[in-house]
Image (cartoon, rainbow, N blue to C red):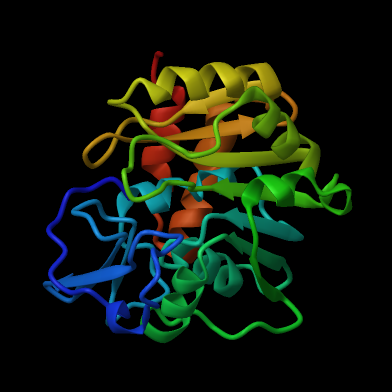
Length: 260
């Protein structure tokens, strides 16, 4: 999400009303068979390999699935910030027994995910909500409702997550069931990183960061309860994930076990 690329196509610009828009324009670029989403800037907000629309193309998106090392069969997954629907699509396909909920404030992002990024239509397992992620996690109906939260909340400036307070992360914790995990995309090269880590450690029992990828992306795993870190068990689980999905789970284990 935080890789710099020039935006070469402005999608849907002609559809916007003359009045000042509420959101930054949704723009696209393509190169080498990969389609990128931007919010009118050079910052990448997500990517899709056109021939593999359900595969998480960017390494940070793959790392956002590292909770799979600890949770094998989630029943309910929520994605906060839709991006290109990469994680929403992947979870929907990979966990056919799970209910998948995506939360996105910008209606243009939802529309372009359906039209340009192969997001499937809503059904009994998939719902896409046009709403603020803060309102979602504070809704009492979502308390103790999810095994997994995936948080990727950036605006056009890409200066750090737009929601980063201890109160926000406490509300996220409250949405998780016992044993639940939240994965969060952070920007390690920005002052927002330390603020987010402090807030997460206040709200969650345990926080682990994976090694930095791309131009500063750092994925944090936030645990509702402190997990048992068994290197042999994690290695065995990683081998299962690699065999079943081809995700680079062995590198996740290496990153989790590396001295901090």
